[in-house]
Image 1 (cartoon, rainbow, N blue to C red):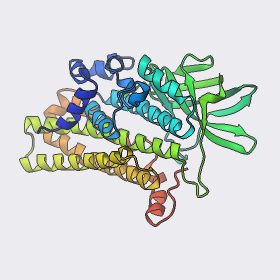
Image 2 (image 1 turned 45 degrees about the vertical axis):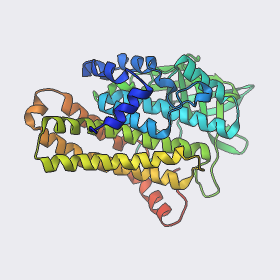
Image 3 (image 1 turned 90 degrees about the vertical axis):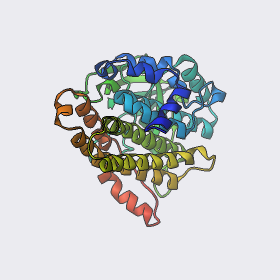
Image 4 (image 1 turned 30 degrees about the horizontal axis):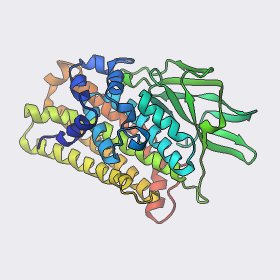
Amino acid sequence: MRFLEAERETLKKLLPGLDDRLAALPREERERPQGPALTLFKEAGGAGLVVPSEHRGLGASAVEAVRIQRAVGARSPSLAVATTMHHFSVAGLIQAYEVTKGLEWMLLEAVADQRLLMASGFAEGRSGQSILASSITARQDGEDIVLNGSKKPCSLSASMDLLTASVMLDTDGGPQLAVAVVPAATAGLSVHPFWGATALAGAESDEVRLEDVRVPPDMVVRTEFGADGSLDRIQTVGFIWFELMMAASYLGMASALAELVLDREKGDVAERARILVELEAAMGGIVGAAAALDSGAAVGQAELLQSLVCRFSVQDTIDRVVPRCLEALGGMSYVSGDDTAYLAACAAALKFHPPSRAWSAAALCTAFTGGPLVLG
């Protein structure tokens, strides 16, 4: 067994040819905005990866999905981040259908059949702000729901076919958090430059603005909170998918550096082994948490807590391992090209995704002492 073999074999099985075609591209091509990576992903059928087979998708399990994200992250960090947002949106749509038995099945079949990409306009990760806060307002106007506001950054902004976004819906009982699905070609939706960094530029994380965007009510899914402030089933499952897929993606970026250390036999053998053990242990945690989604059992606060533990554990693993990989590879590797520095810069960005450690600390401690896990 080789390092990353399980992940790459899963990618090869479900999206055949994608890894080879990505590997054949120069890094600059894989990582640039509106580059070929997303096109290759769509051509391989990636849009329907987690769509259930009964809705014409590939029906990948959660365990298969996290393994694929690690493999993609090791090959193209930008593609991993962008597609995590797509898969997270699809997973939320699946859960919404399971709960409401509404028209979500039509969207799922369209995603799989037409290879549509779904951007995710949820929490922006701004310091001190709840991850459930939304900068988009929604109000009823006749038969339509009218949306106003913006999301920045919003991955897949240039390549999306559909936008899924959290909105604050104005109701008679006060503001209610909901999820809106908006076709990218809808009047009033526009994209504006925002992302200024080189790292992860290919994820197309620019600003999406909505100005008097009109959608039918059946394109808006209302969500609820428990009496103790806990998330409902749709939100809970969605957040678990997000945390695990994102953790696997960034672990893949760190794994790409470790693979260079291993293949070039850099550093002493004990250090190489320590690096590999840390990364594999982190992946084991992700796979274990993902298996809960595949078990068929009810998913709730315990599984959400486990996903957050995995995410922060992976974040800490990356912070420990990446500097040691850079040191083992040596200064000549760092200065002779941008690849190692680029991977290190990309891998560091997991800490910027919501929820932040500072925001989550009290919630985690409360949950571990028997209280509710409240993220809002």
